[in-house]
Amino acid sequence: MRLLGFYLPFSEALDPQASARMHRLVQALLADPLPGVTDLVPGYVKLYLEFDAERVSRAQVERWVRRNLEQTPSPQAGRLVEIPVRYDGPDLAWVALQTGLTTDEVVRLHSSPLYHVFAVGFTPGFPFLGPLPERLRLPRRSTPRPQVPAHAVAIAGSQTGIYPLPSPGGWHLIGSALSQVYNPQREPVFLLEAGDRVQFVPAEGQTPPVPAEHPLLPGEPRRPVLRVEEPGLLDLVLDGGRRMAGRFGLAASGALDTRSAGLANRLVGNPAGAPLLELTLKGPVLSVLAPVVVAFAGYGMLPLVNDEPVGAARSFSLRRGDVLGFRPTGEGARGYLALAGGIESGRFWGSASTDLRGRLGRALRAGDVLGVAELRGARGGFALGQPALTPRQVRLLPGPQYTPEALKALCAAPYELVSGDRMGLRLAGPEVPGGELISEATPLGAVQITTQGQPIVLLNDRGRIGGYAKPALVHPADLAWLAQLRPGQKVRFVRAG
Image 1 (tube, rainbow, N blue to C red):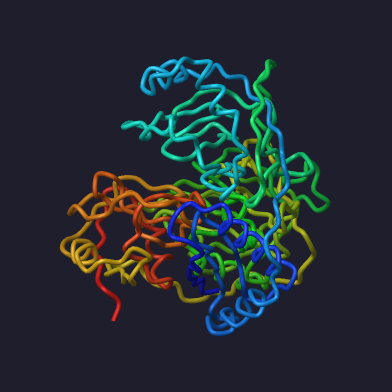
Image 2 (cartoon, one colour):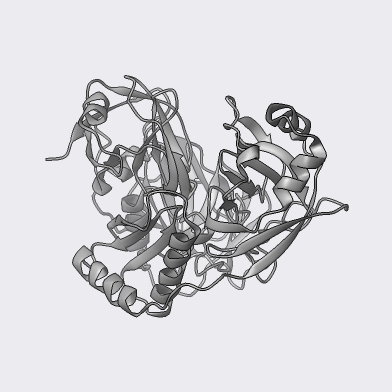
């Protein structure tokens, strides 16, 4: 899979009518699916279309969009959803002071308009609503809060929104929604989508609970083969990823190093996207409950069977009573363990992938039992080549907010990885020109620039909507190598030829 994408502009500023036309087009495209299109993500003024370039060309996607544009009827008013709000947020008095209003006037002004849902993203179910009344418009906080409580109602600039889950945030908190806008254990999962209208209603009542985790692994697998005796640092069941969910803010998820994951599955005869384990830096200790053929590919560790090392990028047989462990190597960050027949797992939105931000599944814990989804006649002893993790230059393509100055700065000197997770890699090095912009979809591999001028490479679990400049995109073929960087390592960017 080689994911590419492009933006389709609808307006230059916040315009509910233009946004409604975008929403109608999205609905038409969903009703007329084109194989190879992997996501449709509305922003405030642009629609992002993502596709697998190995299955469909951009020209085919553009023809599909034009055909549906011609047939899309004039937009109609979206659903009207009333959301009760208890106006007692920690910033309510401060907002009143800054705007010269009383707190009652702030509440009255905030709850008066019918807001348009321009987009859903940042976290799953987070609605970007507007326009906010002029009297309430304030810049976002200079220092974001490290943790905003779930269901907080907030304002910033011309926007208002609801934090569905605990998360960092830089908006001003004026109340709490008394309805859950996201709950993966409920139907509908999402209370709002782009194109809807929202009326806030002042109310009293208890704040809803944080949405519960939606389990994916079965409590009692049909064919149990491995039991977790000790978890690793972060052991996640993943598959090819969650598609066509970006318009609700769900992460695509899936393996970060798709090359290594595909290699592990291929060694045991599984399809490329079969569920397997992604292990980070330190693997688990697993006891074998029944015979099974497995394969490990990737970096950061080597498998041990009864304390005897097994080479990477090869399949091997396990017998009942064996113990499978992993020895850190200090080179690379992620490895993949595939079971012949795939890991038995439930699905959410068509995928078995864990999404920690969306509370879909969880990391493995001691006592968890893994089963195989189907019996597969695989044999141990097969090996395939795995490339060495040699230092390399990472190629950059022009991004949505490309400027020659930004690309020159990115390529001027090496950057050091300060920290990284499944959302992105935070780098330190030469300052890059960037800035804020009207929030739009965030492509996989986008190099987003912070307010301090430092780049973040956005990965699979990124927020699907963002309001910062993205002057460059990492070449899709180089993302797997980047996923193996460890903190302190350096990366050198070059412009793709």
